[in-house]
Amino acid sequence: MSDARWRRTEELFHSAADLAPAERSAFLARACAGDDELRQKVEALLAQDAAQDNVFEAAVQNAAGLVGQQIGPYFVTGLIGKGGMGEVYRAHDNRLERDVAIKLLPAALAQDPERLARFTREAKVLASLNHPNIAQIYGVEDQALVMELVAGHALKGPLPLETALNYARQIAAALEAAHEKGIVHRDLKPANIMVTPEGAVKVLDFGLAAVAPVSTDDSDPTHSPTLTMQTRTGVIMGTAAYMSPEQAAGKVVDKRADIWSFGAVLWEMLTGRPLFEGETVSHTLAEVLQGPIDFDKLPRETPPGIRSLLRRCLDRNVKNRLRDIGEARVAIDAPLGDAPPPATAPAWRVPALIALAAAALVFAAWLGTRLFHQQPITFQRLTFRRGDVITARFAPGGSVVYAAEWDGGPLTLFLAQPGSREARDLGLPPAN
Figure 1 (cartoon, one colour):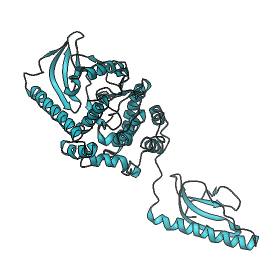
Figure 2 (cartoon, helix red, strand yellow):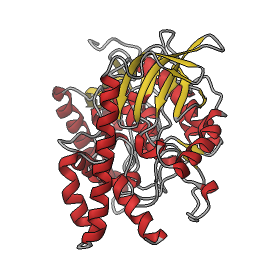
Figure 3 (cartoon, rainbow, N blue to C red):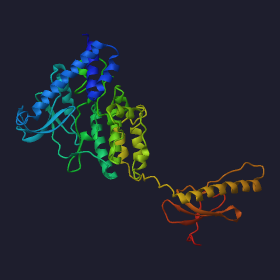
Figure 4 (tube, helix red, strand yellow):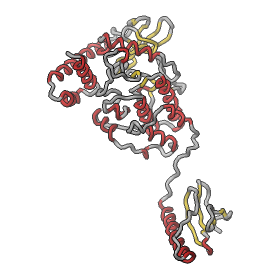
């Protein structure tokens, strides 16, 4: 089999493996497009992978399996959890007398010497990420990734505004540190973000991380584009609800994919709901690619600056998206003097505003006819402040007396003189 043929087979295998079993047949029918030999090879790889997973899961469920075993200097004490990227165990480091987390690599990766070598090299790059908001990678030991054991709970919304922004600031700082080293996470989601009892955020699981820039020369293993899986064009990975549109479309991604995912995570922290949801992975991907984003669903107290930040993070046009996660951190650190948008005027006040506008137009037309004859009609804005006009009356000489509540203040009477750019507070209670 030629190198190009094998690469295509491997790409389709990883694409299909990332889908639900019920969706794989339709995907392969489209992707193989009548190439029965290619489809048979992909299906054989999928069957082999499933068999390996079943054997390994049986060992995991066996109390006499990995728990209680020694992996290098680490004594396995218990199973923490299982996921699509491997099983995670709690272990004790006998050399440094500390507890660690050990993630066993997926069988498809651990049994491939070339890909395992790539993984080991790139794990060293990730281990260089020494940042308080990133769970540290200690190293690779016997086909297992040894990581910092983080106590706490996975991120979950909705959260109070101040708490959500505090966590978002820490997440942005973690991504900024990774991006500065050319590392793209590619799978940022609430399940990969832990909050410690002290309120510190730790970003976990760079299992899909890519070391950028991605080389187009696949013959050079030192330029491997991924940490644990092939991520060439056409391969979809990551969790569907949080992946960027370009990632959902199987295109090459860069750090801006993480910025989209950051926006999706911040959205969920504020609203308590995922930005996109679907009955299946395919439905969710369709929403990511084309579904509307209703920013009115954000809590009312969300500052305009944060709304603007979310709009830029969640721009489907990658060229218009926020280019650097550091900008997000700066926006979050900006004073929250960006007050929430003013409340909509009650329905009973709307007719008063309409009546005032209509009266102003009629008065301006009459005044223009009386004073300026053939000259064009001109209009003058009575105020430049925000609030609600409750009532208004025209006085002799073209003056306007009106009662208004400006900038959340009390009901006040004002006098607007022709030619004046601002009304004068009469200093009288409304009853007078």
